[in-house]
Amino acid sequence: HCFTKSEQDGYLYCEGLKVQDVMESVERRPFYLYSKPQITRNVEAYVEALEGLNSIIGYAIKANNNFKILEHLRQLGCGAVLVSGNELRLALRAGFDPTKCIFNGNGKLLEDLVLAAQEGVFVNVDSEFDLDNIVSAARISGKKVNVLLRINPDVDPQVHPYVATGNKSSKFGIRNEKLQWFLDAVKSHPNELKLVGAHCHLGSTITKVDIFRDAAVLMVNYIDQIRAQGFEIDYLNIGGGLGIDYYHAGAILPTPRDLIDTVRELVLSRKLNLIIEPGRSLIANTCCLVNRVTGVKTNGAKNFVVIDGSMAELIRPSLYDAYQHIELVSPAQPDAEVSTFDVVGPVCESADFLGKERELPTPARGAGLVVHDAGAYCMSMASTYNLKMRPPEYWIDEDGTVSKIRHGETFADHMRYFEGL
Ligand code: LLP
Image (cartoon, rainbow, N blue to C red; front, top):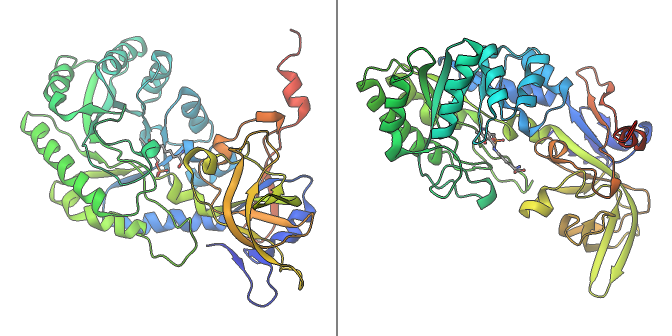
């Protein structure tokens, strides 16, 4: 964890800086604060784990699409995993090498597939109609498309149902019993499609690497079957999904090395190139949402800490009942009573909470309070509900300077949508 409480003075620090000082120096709260060196360390963990394998780290842009962060990840050698035409445009703007990009999704639009074909990115085939659209995109662009078949391996990832994607009831991928239909369809379009690999993605927040191994065994079997029909396919894409330590309770979770080591021998035995699609495990732990306490109140049996951040800036607790660790940025006042609080925002919904039943020293008004591990699926899922405009983002650089990496959205930005109407 790059945000840690000092045992000496009780303040929260990141890369040697007091979060309290950063909070007081920026123009508005809440705001997202990242550690750029932690992003680098997370990528390095994957790069080191992948040593000895031909591989692509396809960063899943949906987790966090901050442009400055994307440029940094690209400079570190990452490719990108995209799920919309705009994510593809953004990746190209950020300079990602198209041959390290993978276009995924169950509802890819024809016009976006045309762009993908023109740019030469890998495209995952998700269904019969998707294949049809990819063939059309190849014809329109005059380019042959490198495709992977997204196979639904039907493995239970043991996670929240909203983030499970590789089991029978999921809307993603092709059913394995339909594999032959897809192989025949690819064969009948030799000018439009080149089959280069197979893909699966099991789900997100996975904390047992055996699940990846079970899926890889199945996938390598499919690859053997596909190769037996004369296809020269070289890529196994095992998706993303590695979980992180949201609880901060000392649990030991699998690392990128643990993940890669469970599939290494299989990949080498078939001389495959490995594609992985991490999002959360590259970016979640590099960031906190920094909020200020507006006040403390008690209603009947419940105590509440009301902060300026909310489900608009960070929806994971409301949407998935997700736990994200919460901490005050400064030491408790000597006379502060420790109580159990729900940490809530100002949005007009009872679903607007950042944490439930958290034990905290009663904070003073104006105290800083962070929600940890906010780098993935937080800003990228933020909304302007209740006209809470999207917050600014900052990072702490290698040399300990704080710079803004995205402006906060303003009321004026909002009114611009109505100009001239
Ligand atoms: N590849 C594919 C095809 C995916 O669908 C996803 C995530 C990833 C890679 C990256 O997975 P990761 O390594 O980040 O787990 N909003 C939810 C997570 C949704 C994940 C969707 N797919 C959350 O906040 O937990």
